[in-house]
Image (cartoon, rainbow, N blue to C red; front, side):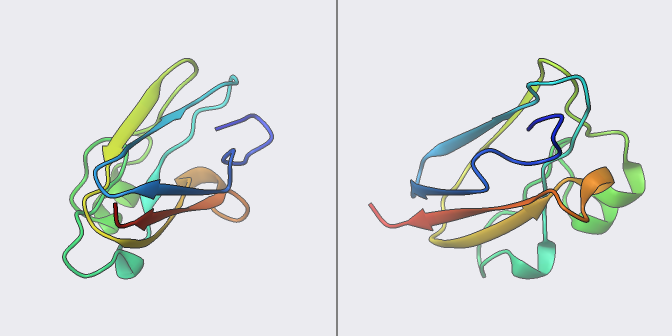
Length: 102
């Protein structure tokens, strides 16, 4: 997550069981927040701060923010596409994790 307000890479393909690590590399804090309605059926919701839902993450922000030199990790156990965003920079800072079977 960069000061240019983007996730690098914007799209990442992983295998079921892989853990994705996000890190803030600049001075601006960000969040990693799944679009709840787009999480595949049966998959766990994810958001930095450990929130159970998108509304909870949005309401609590800046709690759950990932500041400079901090990170957030999530292990993906379900095949599918997982779009996500940064709460304060949602207008341009989005990404997708694509999870494929092993």
